[in-house]
Image (cartoon, each protein chain N blue to C red):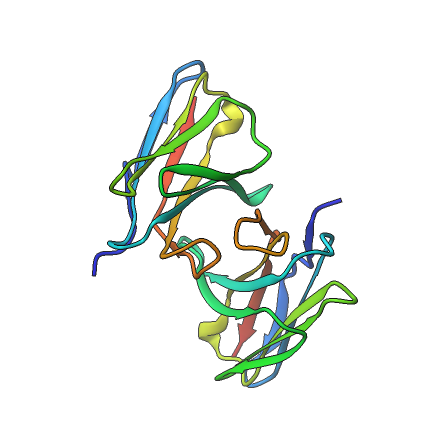
Length: 113
Length: 112
C-alpha cells in the first residue's frame, strides 16, 4: 500500500465548475501537507500548503485537512482550461521538518471549455 | 534571482555505466532534494540534504548516492546503471527544510 493515495483520473471538469481532488495518507504522525501542480513536460510548482485541520483558501483554491481521517483535499473553484494539469498531493511524515516527503501518484485534471 | 539549475538536461548512457547529475539551488537556499519521476511510478523521493548532511533517504538501492557541497550545490550519482533507471531526475531547493520546494527542469536520463 502506497503511503499517499490519490485517484489517478483523468478528472474531467467543465469550465466554470468545481474540481474536487482527494488524497489519503498512511502516516498518522504527518503534520505538513502540500499540493503541487505539474503541467505536462514541466516541473511541479507549489499551489497550497496546509498544516492544521480545517480549510485554507487562496484565490480559487481551497485545501481541506482532516487529520483524524488522514485525508486532505483540494478544491478548484471556477475551473479554467489553464487548470488542466496533474495535481500532486505531498505529505511530510513525522512531526518535524526532517521527515521524509511522500508523493502521491497525482490526479490528472482536464478542464473542458 | 536565478532558479534551480540542473545539468545536463539530457543524458544517454548504457547499462553498467555510472552517471553524475548536478544541481545548483536558488541562491540562499540551503536544502536540496532529489526525485525520480517515471510514467509508471510517478514522482519518488530519493534524498534530501541540508548543510552538507543527508537528512532523509528514500527507498532506493545503494547504487544511488548524493552529496552536497559547502556552497549548497548538490550532485547525485548512480552507479552500475540499469535499464529501469531511465527516468526524469528532478532536483528541488528550499530555503530551509520543510519549506516550499522550487524545482529545476530536470535531467532526462536514458539507459540503453
